[in-house]
Length: 113
Length: 113
Image 1 (cartoon, one colour):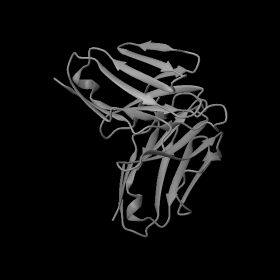
Image 2 (tube, chains in turn purple, blue):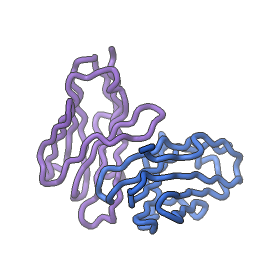
Image 3 (cartoon, chains in turn cyan, yellow):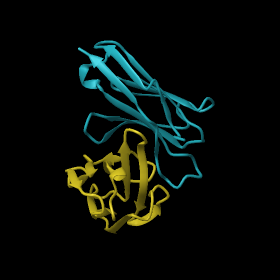
């Protein structure tokens, strides 16, 4: 099964509202990353949070990490129509990993103007 | 920088034909990843290279798939013979170091009839 599992699978909100997506994973990690994918495009890196960090901000993005619960959340504040995309979390599987990232199934976000 | 370059962007072929997908990573990056994305299975890592050496090919579905990286600026993913179930979007990504953020190419949409 996938290392990262996003929740919800789909989310629809109005422009200006906040969007929260969650990710759960199974093994230990060195870091967790979030990516965005616009329709028909490749993934774009948004933010990386290390296992010893609890929260990180980047513009309108806020990421939290709870290693005890093996979960992370991505908050997009004051959403815009341009934020419509799929969002994926990716984990590296921890110290025993050979270096690959394992992606979840993603959350599809629709922001209505 | 032009980013990760993939070619072709679209490929339509018939079952049994050989397909070769190409990737040029970002200059200076030493890790290269090949992914496959489908609605059913999501984003799957097929193989990755570090300093042109294949590190983990456990995601390669079967012997019909092969990948090479003859130098730091070029990689190929070959499917021979192709089958309809290989239809997917294939992404190449590169990173500066194994655990860092990955930069994705635009993908190759492969359709096998």
